[in-house]
Structure formats: C-alpha cells, structure tokens
Length: 303
Ligand code: RIB
Ligand code: CA
Image (tube, rainbow, N blue to C red; front, side, top):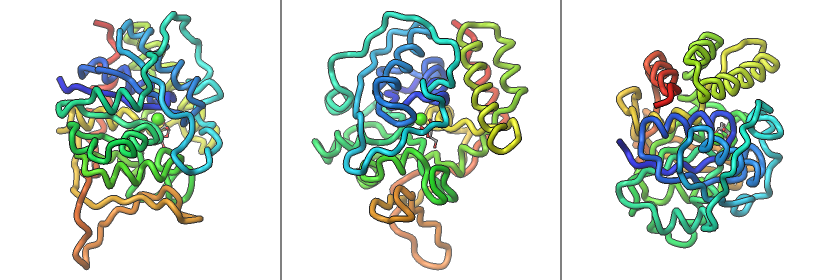
C-alpha cells in the first residue's frame, strides 16, 4: 500500500478522504491548514475523524492564514463547524507539538506521497524553507484547480484561490504532481443511493460518512435544486491508491497570483495549434465513476 501524508482542511469531503486513505494506504500523518473553517476547527475535525476510525495517525497543525494574500472568508459550504453540524464524537485526541511545516520538511521521504486537500499554504511554507523539498519526496496529489470553470470565482477553485502564491510555488517546485481539479471531481457525483448504500453498511464510520453525504446533498439541493453532489477530496486519494480508475494527461499547469479577476486560476496549457509549454503535472481528465463509487462505498466497513 502507498505511504501517504494528508494535508487537509476538514471539511466534509476531507474527512471522507481521510477514512478512505486509512483503508487503502499507510497513512503516516495528517497535517492541517485553515481553509473550509479556521485552523483550530480543521485540526479538531481531523482529530475527531481519526478518533472515530480508532486510528493512531498523528495530526500536526499548520498554517492559520495564506502565505501572502489576505485570508478569504472561510468557505461557508461546510457549515460553521466544518462538518455540516452533524453529531460529533467526543474524544481525547490532541495534535502533536511539532508544526505541520516542520513535519513535512523533516519527515516526508522519497517513498511518501502528500495528498493535498486544502489551500497549499503548508507546502508553500516548506518550499520557502527548502526550494528542493518537492524533488525529494514521492509526489503530491492535489485536489485543487480546474481545467475548466471555477467554484469560488468564475475561473478559480477554492483551494488554489485561497492561497494562490503557495499553489504557484507547488506547481513550480519540480515535484511529481497530480492535479484532480473541478473538471475531474465534478464527474464523481454522489446521490441518495450512494448515501443509502453507505448507511446500510451499519458501522460507526458509515453512519458518520452517510451524515456528511446527507449534508452535502442538502446543501446542493438548496443551491441548485438537485440531490447530486461532487465528492472532491477523495479523488486525490484515489489518484494514488487506485490510479487505474483515471485517465491522465501530462500538461503545463501554472497559477495566477496577481489577476484581479483571475486570482488562483490554474492556467493549463491545452493548446492544439501551437507548441505547448513544458508539462509539469499529470492532470486527471476522466474517472471511472461507477468503480470509484464502489471503492469508496466499500471502504467504510470496519476491519
Ligand atoms: O473546491 C473544493 C475544495 O475546497 C475541497 O477540498 C473542499 O474540501 C474545499 O476545501
Ligand atoms: Ca478540502
């Protein structure tokens, strides 16, 4: 099984991705960042998720604000507690005293993949300290960006928009990169039948995941009237644990950091009429939705 570190901002889909990674990888550590909700809450949500899974994975708290840009309003789409206000588990877990930056800088090997599910601030801080870090690790699988439209703005996805300077550093780092952008994650739609299938597993994890899915379905129903919601963060885990589910294309990806209208846009060179810029990223273009949903649904049976 691949050796992973998850950098995240739980976040409903982050929490589901953590449980997925626990099932299909050696999850060495979790690092947290401010994003969907402030850092203290994303860290608590990561600790609660690990406690719910009865795992011993250490959690390292990271950046509370972006590298350079002004903090954006936290993404209200996961509720004020970041997990949709679902019933919480009481636990006695605490995060490590080491910072996320120091953990990533000193404890990620050339065998490890970092799964980046939130704003890339922690990785940006590491690259500020050691510009060659990205070349020393296994790779980075990113939920972020888009080859098409955005979500937090017409052209930018929330994670890359929140810290465009960190994202630009990551894409320029020379690391082996996978990008699971909105163009991909919007293919992985969960519905009531997904939620029911998960709930029928009858475990503590599946009840937790079904409640998170129900929140995501209620939110999308309120905004667009349909109960069919994209599941973003698990895609970046599956891209490493189950790569055969995906079609990838090697492309150049850069991040706009200065544009008034285009802050955080991932500029992906897909030109067909001119020589393209040198590729730096494996961009996920297609996912086998049925098989991916089967893998995800089957993951919440407890060992
Ligand atoms: O744009 C989707 C991303 O923003 C996901 O990682 C979600 O958790 C939020 O952080
Ligand atoms: Ca996230």
